[in-house]
Amino acid sequence: MTATSSSPAPAAPHKIAIAGASGRMGRMLIEAIRANDDCVLAGALDQATSPAIASDASAFLGYASGVAITADLQAGIAPASVLIDFTRPEGTLRHLEICRANGVNAVIGTTGFTAQQKAEIEAAARDIAIVMAPNMSVGVNVTMKLLEMAAKALSTGYDIEVIEAHHRHKVDAPSGTALKMGEVLAQALGRSLDDCAVYTREGETGPRDPSTIGFATIRGGDIVGDHTVLFAGTGERIEITHKSSSRATYAEGSLRAVRFLAGRKSGLYDMFDVLGLRG
Image (tube, rainbow, N blue to C red):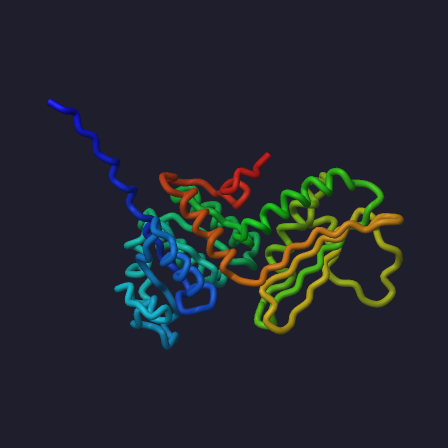
């Protein structure tokens, strides 16, 4: 008899639910899922007041996915293996309750969480696997690694300022990405961001405290997201900048996080884990 061989069966696609499916980020995520053969749209959520409720989630792309946008959290999340959520903190926490009850993992790009809300996410990560990062862009997270290296090398003699700019509709400030950059910088310097951050300057401020990390916020137009960290020394300035021109980078990074979570049952991770930048 002649031995025969067969190709291994292709892996099942990642079944993904999208929160805020009719918003700008939601649509970008749905488009990215459509473009990646190893991913499939399994659920689409939006607020009950959205005019998109009951419509096909992929109608804006000119094809029918067979997945209707719903405000029913159970119906929208349970069919998926992972939820991607870029909504608001209160909504994300409600979604996580359903994820936890159904064993659905989560990728969270939502920003603006309080310390108590972050503790709730940590508690959920005991039962499901979660990737949470204020910015899913691969480039932003590589930038953060560069900031860690720069802060260690420039730990004395350099003042550090974080400048961020976003579109006029952004509701939190500084951005979650800017705050994460501040945390990376402070940790590299052996400090706590809570103790050294300066968010506002007005009036007679006195000379700059060299141990602080300053933040400046710009809001206007349709800026997707610009972040610059300035290391200002005597006789030189070093600037490390990342500029986003499209939310597509956030979507592709989110799908990398989805793939990272495959087979994981619990734990709280970030994009450094996803990209192998830890350590």
